[in-house]
Length: 211
Image (cartoon, rainbow, N blue to C red):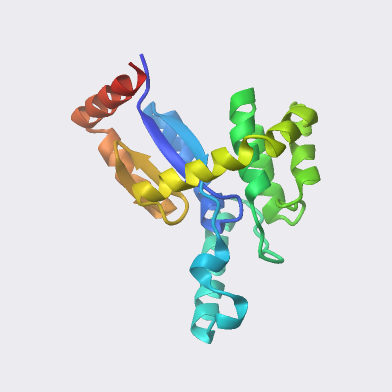
């Protein structure tokens, strides 16, 4: 029996995506759904502006956001250190796509998040991401061939499709065509999942796409 799918858009450099992981995996385990993980690689300058353009109001908001995310992290026993600079998460994002096809998504996903937020991993360093792939059992030449081949086009297509759906930030969950942004919205898709008629509609949509 197929399970209804909850699509999750995430980015390894997002503190709120990091602290949402525990509840998202619990959602999968407790409610019989399948999580489909896709990257939504945030373009920081696009929505935050350049450093020179940022106002004192902006920096107060940023400091609060990291303090708030750290509270969630502390409650889960997670280490969260503030990022040292602005990162392009492309390599880590396409790593997410690669490992799902090779059957070791969870160890990669957990390792990249944990090591990035404890300052043990540079997610925009191809060699560093390749080392994580290797540590999880993947083959470096295969990953590097993917990065230098179809990865960019696939990554950009996923971003374009996400934005066509209305995605603008992470974590964003999509269930039965409805968007929910933020870890504090996880109860909303749970409420939809618990409705029998919603599950029936979601499974019907999945079946139509497969035929």
